[in-house]
Length: 506
Image 1 (cartoon, helix red, strand yellow):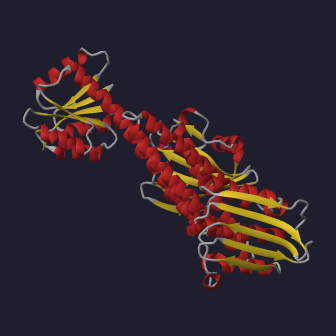
Image 2 (spheres, one colour; image 1 turned 90 degrees about the vertical axis):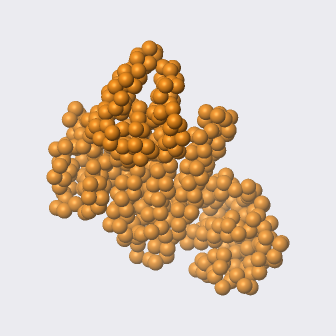
Image 3 (cartoon, helix red, strand yellow; image 1 turned 90 degrees about the horizontal axis):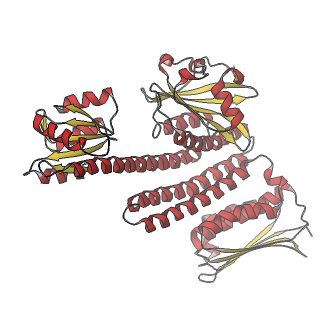
């Protein structure tokens, strides 16, 4: 373990060396006499931990720690105090030090153990911080879908969101068409701005090994040093410092089986990215795929109704998945804090994190399912309902009974309208009704095909709700488009029944 010792007393320094020399762990000690010298040494080489005296020629007290942490926030720090200065040590721990030791009361075993534990605690805290930032940034990326459907704005905001969690000097987004790709956006972290690529060109994928690997494998790729592998730097044509690039991480922007493009990170430092980076970048790329596809659909859409559906999908994604991710992040943070003192509680929290993650994945699948062109018309109503109901039942204590008559051959417009009406009704039930049981029944009646949605919730007064609240106005509009009649029966405290009757379908 490489330890930086910032200590101006030669006698104390010799004692520390002797104490650690007697331990089973091999410590490499690098001394500095002042805070300024220590910070300068830190800039030259990496360290696992720092032993920091709080009484130095150029800094005294807790401000010494604060100045050091401002320069190196992710390095484990153990502070050293005098006999009469233990209160300062306690304040230092509150300010971010992992531990404090009192000079003259420390033996080799205690000193060694304190350093080892400090490194492990710092590692856990750093992992916790990175996971929390990652969850927040991932949740923020879902908000992109609800904030805009303009492709240029989507690309800019994806890159800006990446900058909140990933270390990089430059990041790019490339879009793919046929066997070529085009770098369309670049984010320079130094300037912290995202800009379109000027004079960009369509480039053959096969000439760029890193990009070709992403497209072929549909998996992320990390390169610790681009100088030791096949890498074409021309992908950064407009970047003046491209010769300084050393590390690379990339992920395909994948929607189902179609690769829409790639997201790439570049760093001037080698070994910047790890396998974890690649997997997290893949999660961002999945969000980017939805955002980009929504933006393209918006551009291509000729009907206002189609645009409204894409916006609804974006809101659903933000409301459901981002809230689940936030909860998951908080529980993961709590489990890390419980890990040493209460492993059973930590395990219970992690099991809940797994359950919530699977629910979020199920909800994401539903939204991706709906985004696929033509899927609503080429899938049976039973399959559509089963796909949609799965995440609702998983996240809520709600028992849903589904009964749909077989051998239905519905026009695509009719099937879509019935699905959307049911979707809106379930959304209302989930948010407002506090119901525990719901039944969805689609049957052939003499009057026509009849959809009945019943819940045992709080109920409401339909005469006051038809002004537009609870989504009833939207449900009525959808029914009118397929010449169907809709009737809502409800009373306060007695649940709700919604009937939709489509004539001429026996």
